[in-house]
Structures are given as structure tokens and as C-alpha cells.
Image (tube, rainbow, N blue to C red):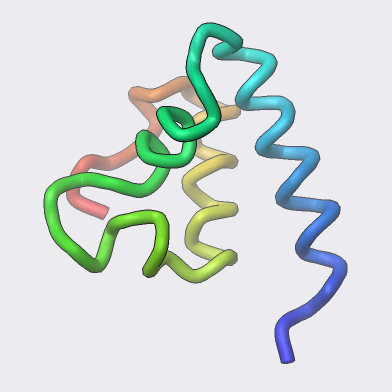
Amino acid sequence: MRDPARIARISEKLLQVWQKYPDLRLGQLITNLGEFGSLEHYAWFIEDDHMEQRIDAVLAKGWAGLDKRT
């Protein structure tokens, strides 16, 4: 079973990213966090811990913090 505590933790981080980039719609935000050219990187397929790492990277370095190859 996945850790239920992840929900509040990741939601708070997602809120911070969205507040940092308020002109993005939610769908754009999620897509930008997940989609980089191959099927396994669509947000649907990304495990929560990997998505959280991507959110952390955006919080730390902006969109430049995302490695387009990951």
C-alpha cells in the first residue's frame, strides 16, 4: 500500500508550484511536470515519488530544474 501521508505532502508542494506559476492551468501544470516525449513519462504513468522529485526540482530551480531526459 502506498503511504497515505504522501497525499498532503505532494499536494502542498504542487500548490507551491502553482502559486509560483499562476498563469498555468492545472492540466498544463501536470503535463509540464510529466510529459517529455516518451509514453512512460506522461503524468499518468509516473510514480508519486518520481513526480514529487520533479516538483521539488521546479521549486528549487524553476522549469530549468527539470531534466528533459528524465
